[in-house]
Image (cartoon, rainbow, N blue to C red; front, side, top):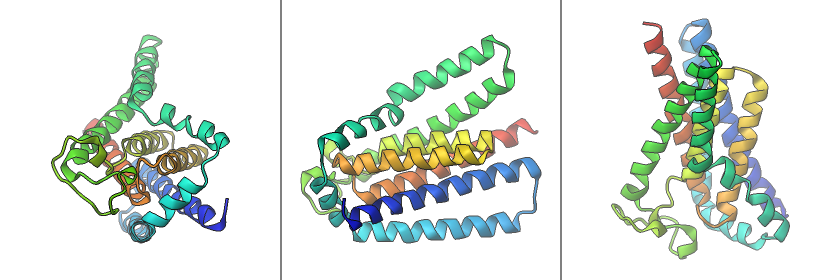
Length: 236
C-alpha cells in the first residue's frame, strides 16, 4: 500500500480517536459531576478537529476512492468481510436483545439496564440514519457520479450513500458501550472497530470517505446525547 493509503487510514483513526475521547469525557462528566467549562472547551476542540477532517475528506473523496479501488487484493477482500458482521443490524440487534434477556434472567439488573441504554442509543442513531438516507439522496461512488451528486427524497439505493448505516451502527454501539464501561481499553476497541468498518465501506466502493466521517460523527453524537438523556431521567 502506498503513502496516500496510509494517510487515509490515519485520518479514519483520527476521527475515531476523537469519538472515543468524547465518549470517555462524557462518561467521566456524568459520574463525577465536574464543572462544565473544561469539558465544553474540550468537546469544542474535538468537534473543530472533526470538522477539519470532514473538509479534508470532501476535498480528497475522489482520490481516496481511486486509491481504494487500486489496492483490492484477495486477502483484503476476505479481511473486509468481518465488517459486515459487526456493522449490521442483523447481527447487532440479536446480540443486544440476547444480552438484555440473559442478564435479566440471571438477576444482573445493572448489566441489563446498561444493555437497555446501549440498545436505545443504537436504535436512536439507526432511526436518524434511516430517515437521512432517502432524504439526502447522495449518489454512491460506484454510480460514477460526482461526489456531491444528490437526488433528495429517493428510494433508489444507488443514492443512499449518506449516511453509512454500517458506520452509524458501529459508532453508536461502541460509543454507548464506552460510556457505560468508562475504561480506556474499551475506547481503544471502539477506535479499532470504527476504523475497520469505515475503511471497509470505502474499500467496497459503497461510500465516499466524507460519508464515513459524517456518519461517524452522527453515530457518536446520537449515542452520546441519548445516553446522557437516559441517565438524567434515571437520576430524577
